[in-house]
Length: 230
Image (tube, rainbow, N blue to C red):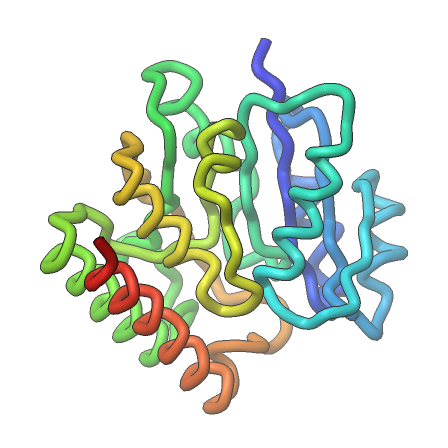
């Protein structure tokens, strides 16, 4: 039986984190919540819901993901699949089975949960998010022939393939870095349409002008870096 571990970066998600954890299917062997300098009850609520809780004081989505991966690397049991999932309850954690199925049943390396318009609650994605996704995926199609339509955070990847990517981004560029490196290393990938709803609480990235601008700069920076990389 495949070993699946979930990594959830979380910054001040006290009101949502237990909902996320409780809705994750039983096929997962461990849920790892990385509190990214949270100042509320995120850690307590995550522990009470049954998750392994780590603390990463350096702010940044990538920092939190790397902290989770560092923890996994030190365990005696190596997972087969890593799933990344946000802690704001905008994704539907019960759809994790759809995300991992192509890996478990078809030997696909990498799966993105695509937040398609028909399955997206009104207002769940901001205009900057929608435009940023369109621009990033359009550029990836232009430069690399990619078939991505989204930079969705709900994603699964074979653990050995993930290690080979040598992920390094510490902040907003984590998702696009993974997709670009997957393209460069010729991983097999698919997108699976997923439902998406309005998050609990306020977004720390798309909910602020500063966050949206810096995220956009970081994403475009990774794309152009790889466009000219030999």
